[in-house]
Image (cartoon, rainbow, N blue to C red):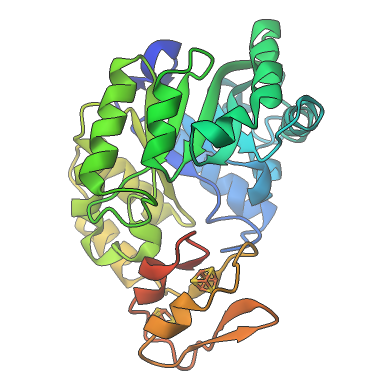
Length: 316
Ligand code: SF4
Ligand code: SF4
């Protein structure tokens, strides 16, 4: 049984498992529209009411409320890189039209780094405040991998929700430790911000400790929900069970553990080559300025996922 938690001062109740849609989308598992929507319908049946997407992910079509009327009552979070009023208006319009929703519940800025980058998005934030006033969105969000950004957002009245990186090993936190991020998020929560978490499984690096990794973020008092990217019913059931504090059926755990895995390189790979340096199996080369993985050599150790500063390479 999933008991919803409230997302900070927004008053929006969300399930402790937030269905992350990046994994099912075109850059990763690439589920057909039918399979993706079936998976979302299954999650709704399991009591999930919170779905995370982003303009970048290309997954709006899966979340089409006309095709899946059960989504009408669900909470959708999305964001874009838009920095100007005009571009943010376009982004929100795209989200509302593509998902056939009058209201995109939580909408905002993708991957901010600090008070300075937030200042650079002032125009976009002003548009979002107006969109909230008009009832097109219910809350303004910021997503980040940076402690400094969490601290800056904590003091910004306009922003309601923070989507931040946190995991057992502090992987991917760009400017501090796990403890630094915990402290910053606890402060944000005390300022009334709703907090939900990304990368609890460290881009796939923590799959072997998946239950422990999810339990860690689940039990932090300032966390309302944890976004986990899923592509199968077993993964939905696993995340639902662990994040709601229930028993994980043995068959589900076994299926989740034994699911075939592969390494995926995202479009936004910057080609820095750091992942290739740590791959002890020579499976990664740089091709046309991006990492390319040879599946015949890859041993799925996950070291590359641990190393990439932007989670551009993941074990799925
Ligand atoms: S996947 Fe990450 S670490 Fe590897 S080349 Fe791309 S940006 Fe660099
Ligand atoms: S998972 Fe391990 S073996 Fe495979 S590409 Fe990454 S570092 Fe290399």
